[in-house]
Image (cartoon, rainbow, N blue to C red; front, top):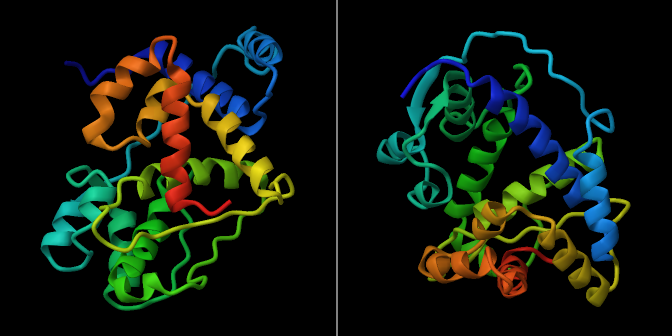
Amino acid sequence: MTNYLDPIAATEKPRNDFIRYLLTAYPLRDSALRTAFEQELQQRGSIWQSPYLEGSQPYRPDCSVADLVAEGVLHAEMSRLFLPHRPLYQHQAVAVRAVVERQENIIVATGTGSGKTECFLLPMIDQLLKEEGELQAGGVRVLILYPMNALVNDQVKRLRQLLCRQSSNRPRIQFGFYTSRTEKEEKAAQQALADELRAYSDDELLSLIPSAEQAEMRELVTGSRREVVVTRACELVQEIQTL
């Protein structure tokens, strides 16, 4: 185990993440076109070049979600949705305490990759969980506004992964989203969801599956029956996402 930077991983991971995003954002239905699109994205000079790396100091760590749950700051279900023992950055913990404990409004002005999303996502989901009795009634309780479709698409993937982890024995938080590319007919929306999930990596697809089904689905996702896993993931996503 080493603390040194792995230059190969540092080069390949951002590139592969960006390619996966493009495949998700533009889910071509024709398998031949989708394959050709992915092959083109993998070519040097299409969307990527050799990387430029700049060193920066890590953000200062603080308490974990599990610590905040133990203190009574966050709802107990938060340990199920988020990585419970991973330390939050100091500015994330400060933001959570400011919003949850003191009911303050905040502005987060940290750098790229600093986890600004957690600064509002943790207090937001915590509040919804604490309103358990209200979740059974219809209505919109939270609005998240983004200036670009790309930011919406990235957060939708994350919300799916988080909310699919919810306990089945309590009212579930659900979400919906709208961009200029949102399908308005139910069948078209279901097809668009299936196409999008087909573009997920195996690990991303399995992250939507309950732990009790993981072993079975992992065998299927790497074989010729990947479509079974996509269908199951579609069913689970539609339990927490309105189309």
